[in-house]
Figure 1 (cartoon, helix red, strand yellow):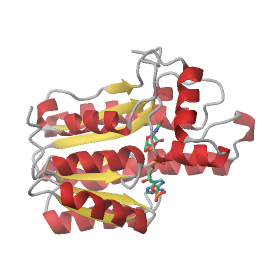
Figure 2: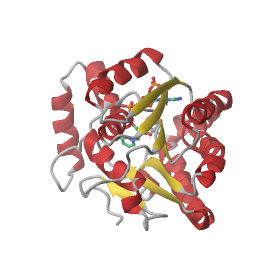
Figure 3: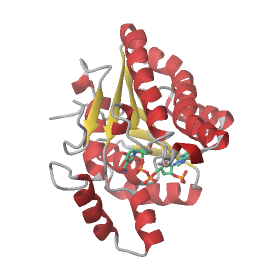
Figure 4: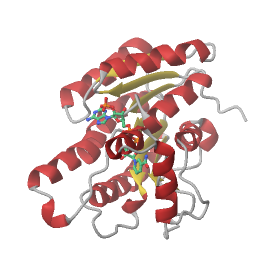
Length: 262
Ligand SMILES: NC(=O)c1ccc[n+]([C@@H]2O[C@H](COP(=O)([O-])OP(=O)(O)OC[C@H]3O[C@@H](n4cnc5c(N)ncnc54)[C@H](OP(=O)(O)O)[C@@H]3O)[C@@H](O)[C@H]2O)c1
């Protein structure tokens, strides 16, 4: 199936590692024009250099060092992409990190930081991209969330609350922006291989494969394994593509069957 992504302009936050980086690689193979941001400029540039030789004809890359919790950085991210390509067809609000634990231990600062990273950044960047998505005659927005958005558990704040907000935002915007041809969907992650688990394994002094086996056993994932970053990239590429043109307002669990919620 041709995803018809060649030449499309897509912005990805958290694009230097894990799920975001897998999506950059996949869109490169599809010939898209991809702007991707994260805070560490070296890692962004390394990814751009790695992807370029294997990219499809017409693919282009714009790594932009930016912290999504800073409005000025988000403005610069959009300005650079639009300055280079003159349009935006897709936006993936993906930057984030896990923040969970006993409710009583979370100070106002912890809550504020999580809401800034996961909710306010998505609101701001989507608002900044909106005029360009409208000018392009429509497009696709994806919010990367977690299965806790639908099924919050004990010890899951503040992440579950931020992710539930992201799901509500997804649904509300899908209804509001549908008439403009702008589709808004969410991908709710269970457990997928990514940089955050590499770092967790290193902290514990174990191999990452050992950690994945442990996570898989401990979570009782019906498909019997932790997912791969490529599983996310394949789904996100489809949601970004015109081939998903009648799909909006959904929160898709990408979790090997883990979530009890459909
Ligand atoms: N993998 C999972 O099992 C899982 C489960 C549930 C939800 N998720 C969600 O999926 C998304 C991707 O996670 P991942 O597993 O791919 O994580 P990851 O491997 O740690 O990658 C996170 C990416 O986000 C960037 N980032 C972090 N904070 C940022 C900020 N303030 N501004 C800009 N970029 C920032 C990181 O680069 P810098 O550090 O250089 O900024 C990196 O590129 C996150 O929203 C995460 O919460 C993942």
